[in-house]
Image (cartoon, rainbow, N blue to C red; front, side, top):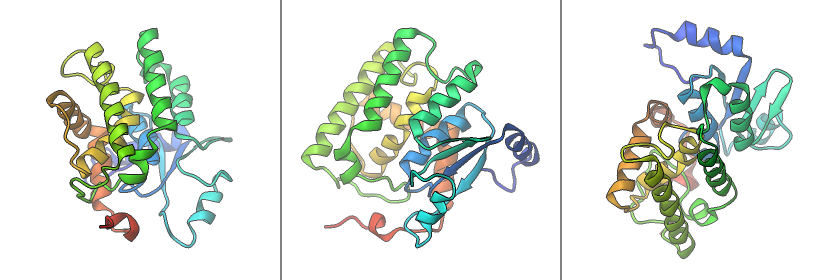
Length: 237
């Protein structure tokens, strides 16, 4: 788990992580949107884990990832003898293993909606992914507004408006912070980097997610990283 030297609970945190037996393999916090999702979920719900960071775009990146999973992608959750190499599968596994954490909404209809929007995020929005990659340290105002990305922004806005209308003002997508919010946290990072203009209610949601302790901790980690990937740090003219 991300910690600092000033953390007074460091030894307890590390001890709990070791006891849990959970290890999460992630890539650069600044760039890896897929890694962010389960990391934020586990941190937000106080599930102890050992963080295993790898660096993207290095000569040994593929070999490093292959050491943990032949799927060749991060994140990877190591749970004893079990290896889970998909971010949504990781979140589902954790929700089943820690039912008391209530990582999904308790209401059956809300839970179905939450799973649906996570699945849509998981498999879609290629316009935003390709034109507005995640780079927390960067500022690319107005960049990436392809037709496909604009359509994705519209659909994401529709999803958020629908969920927030059901959950009430000042809340997360389903009231309390859930896997759904963790799953859209990388989108929040993109909207901040590219300064996407939203309505007041959605702007407020973006700020609430960014200020959530687990998300803020990830952002802090991203800002403190020194590794750079040039192709993601400079937006082509």
